[in-house]
Amino acid sequence: MGFPYVRMRRLRRTPALRDLMHKVRLKTSDLIYPIFIDERAQEPVPIESMPGYYRLPIRYVVDEARQVIERGIKAIILFGIPSRKDETGSEAFAMDGIIQKTVRNLKNEFGDQIVVITDVCLCEYTTHGHCGIVKDGEIVNDLTLRILQKIAVSHAQAGADIVAPSGMIDGQVKYIREALDDANLNQVGIMAYSAKYASCFYGPFREAVESTPKFGDRKSYQMSYGNSDEALREIELDISEGADIIMVKPALPYLDIIYRAKSKFKVPIAAYNVSGEYAMVKAAAQKGWINEKFAILEILTGIKRAGADLIITYFAKDVGLWLNRI
Ligand code: PBG
Image (cartoon, rainbow, N blue to C red):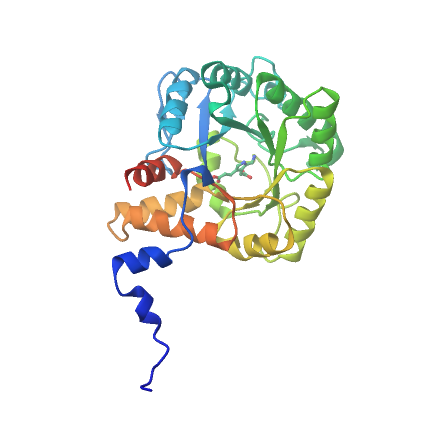
């Protein structure tokens, strides 16, 4: 027997063999597309640090969603930029607020053809830019819970299929679940941003939705990137509080967390491929330093291979175009 008798290259010999052995494949139904809706905008507003991405006026969102559906994407997640901010973020739960109006429009047009997810948080709606109520420079947990309940119920009443609390406020999943159930909205799901790290990779998003905190940072509620057991505790808590889907965010520096969560819990896991991760790919591609399409497919497949069942990504529409052509 000649050495080497185990030859790994046998199964890599031809394109058909390689295809046969290529096991983790992205599907358009893995992806969730984020949409930013700007109440003041008359026309799409380009976001400088997210080339190719825009804040949309409300009247553009139905067409945008139609394109998303045509490309085989099954879900969108909505973020609102209100024209009026205040200390308590009251526009976030206004019945005629930007998200509530948009959700109603989308559901009138598309019904159950698309899963509408709404981000439930205060940071875009508060003058200080924090994800909770602020008193004496502190983010007050339990006062914030009451507001999050109102936001979630208002989104669900407008027709959202899933609400996604992203503020890392302790108890938010339980409080929201109870409020939804009390309002006879027990069919509405919760996708919990469970393991959300205090990350520099949110920078472009904060520019996009004007949610940069006016003082301090988010480290008293988001997790420190040195920790991993803490992420599993957060996830476990959210599952016990009633989360239907849990999330790890960002994705790329936290593939180990996705993998550990997937191994430990039997709940669908979403990963958020965040704005800074998008910006890095775009910047390198613009310089001609990487092939954009190949980079995106490799990154998203890697996130899926780590264990993500769903990926929130600004690349979803591009991927929809590419996958539908194959
Ligand atoms: C907070 C929120 C953030 C993102 C989504 N919801 C970031 C933050 O903490 O400022 C980030 C998404 C991204 O960077 O793409 N409500």
